[in-house]
Image 1 (tube, rainbow, N blue to C red):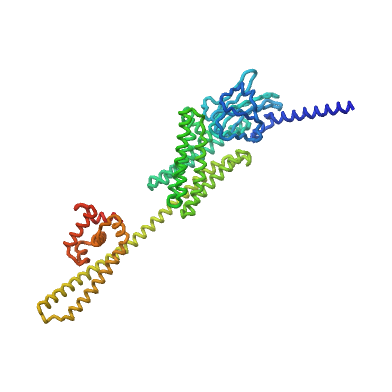
Image 2 (image 1 turned 180 degrees about the vertical axis):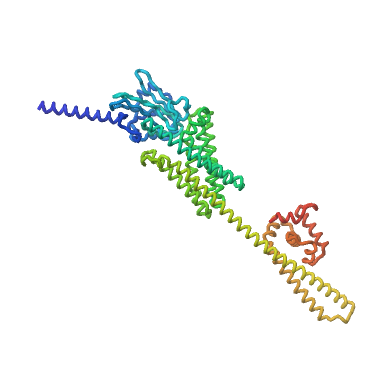
Length: 553
């Protein structure tokens, strides 16, 4: 029995040691076995420092929590984050690698490790000058070197005013150089394509005097600046020695991209005409983003609070969703060229989702998934260019339709003018007929028995018919100029019927003699009526009545 118990105890002890050994093997990164495709988040332990005061000596003693995911994602926090992990070389030869943290917006990252009794530290990050980095690259890199059997514990202190996400891998130097070359080539192609689109639309804006093209160029520029910043090129090549701009370039570019995109959507989609809700929401996000930027700058620069750019980032996200919503609403409301904007934003949002899923290791890494949002930006720019072209063609068609309608109205005016000339001739005949009747009546009064009363009655009936015809034609003129008469009487309700008639005939460019004949009065009477009309219209004697009336309608 004792032998059996002794055997059982030894067996349990052996199993325990084996399990512990396996657990240690799992917790320690085997540098000789992992490749650049292995994301090492499950080997990492995490601790938060809300005081922002913990140093490396104290970091050794604080409690760490093991990460359960390949990518350590802690979201937006205003604390320092400490990461702890061990690396061991279990191979048969010394190894050199680079520890990579893929393209995060981390303000500062410090990697601590001991050599003997002394701490060594490497610094990198968005707010660290290039000259102070051991490796100057768009992603964050630290050099690692291990002898055979060597084990090293690393402590990584990080701070960022953005989301804290850590995709940690190890790469060979050749892989690092290839990655940087590919990154540089992809960014150069992106910049080249978008700069061409920007300058093309700026030229269109100047040539066509249409601010929509200018706003579209600004939208593309805003997206380009954000991407250049996020991917590390702004820091590496442009703003390394400018601390203030290092601190604020990203929120400023995010705000610029948001506000100009909102204004572009308002003008391009004609939201005020097609969708009132979209119009007010886009205007709201425009002002929200400006207020958010001012708030975080005042909060940090004047009151010393920790930086937090999440309000600005939230504004950009809301603007993207509102642009898609507005495109759909205005298209359903009758704006035909809104469909291109909807397609463009769907493509862009889809590629951003693909890139996000790749970062979180849901999708495999390849050329497409790693550059999905860059591809989406180019597709968005091309589709929006098609939208702008379609808008231009639509406006040209509408302009042609207006010109055709104007020509048609000019023909109608010509026909009406001929009718008026005919009316004038008939009015002259009518006047002569009335003069003849007047003479005949005088002769009757003088007891001139040679006058035939039946003839006079016939002339009177004829004159009555002529008067009725004049009234019909005058009514036709009033109907044709109904819009002008409505606007005139709305602005000057004190005008009499005679004033309106004189104004209408004057607008039609009739002479005083023609107006007198048409109204059955004298030229002098027309002159007096025009003078009274000008006084009621608050015109001086030198002002042109015709020019004033032309500006009414």
